[in-house]
Amino acid sequence: MKLHAHNLGWTTRGKTIVDDVTLDILPGETFGLVGPNGSGKSTLLRLLTGLLPRPAGRVHLEGVPLESMSRRDIAQRIAFVEQMADTSEALRVRDAVELGRTPWLSALTPLGPEDRRIVTEALEATGLAHMAGHSWSTLSGGERQRVHIARALAQRPRLLVLDEPTNHLDIHHQLSLLRLVSMLSVTVVMALHDLNQAMGCDRVGVMENGRLIACGPPAEVLTPARIAAIFRVHVTPLRDPDDNATLFRFHCLEDHS
Image 1 (cartoon, rainbow, N blue to C red):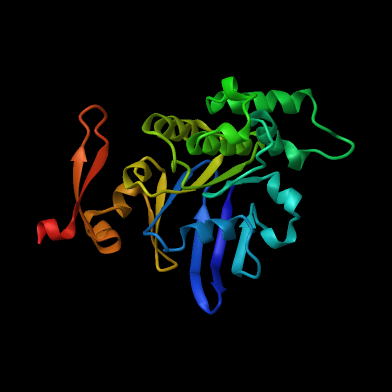
Image 2: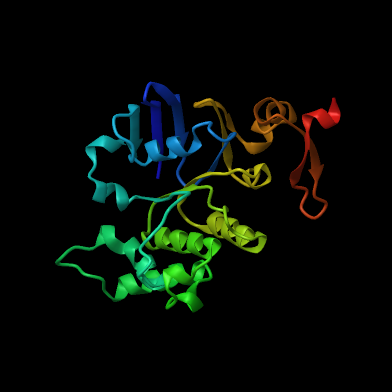
């Protein structure tokens, strides 16, 4: 699914949070959004999914203005996993994942065998099949994050939007999640803190003070000079001998003064 944002912005209480962002997300790509805390990443994701009122600019899905679409229509195309998502304490894991099927259901089309199959696939893909009967209240932060991602997968979106999806996950589940995302046949947009993880994206956008200041292939965008200027750290690029991938080692700037 192609998404186009033109001159997108959002202001609250007189403060501009996102400022004049124009961005094209290409069908099938994995797009990483990086930037310091407070740079506007989460707000931009919410604008791209139509969750904030009275934005400046426009968002189009496959050429159709987002504002002309119903929430149900949007939810059938976009799944959004927020950074601080929560759900009812009374639900079991499978119940929570079944909520992902809601945009496709109605009074005349309740949850059916095909929906249950999709939910089972989502549970298996996120390594949660053995926890399907567990209560939400018993889950760790990382397990809850995986449930939210499973619910998004059950939604069968064409565009998957993830806000800091590896937060609260141990290193094994971080790598498993990123591998899963890379294998999905959907367009993915995700905000990331870890620049090494961002290097695995098809393209990367860099946010600073609400503006998108750079966008392109990770190796071209995440240069040592730009990282130093935006994140105020010195970076040493390293080469992994196993696959020739570029990795970063970070140091405080004062260590190299």
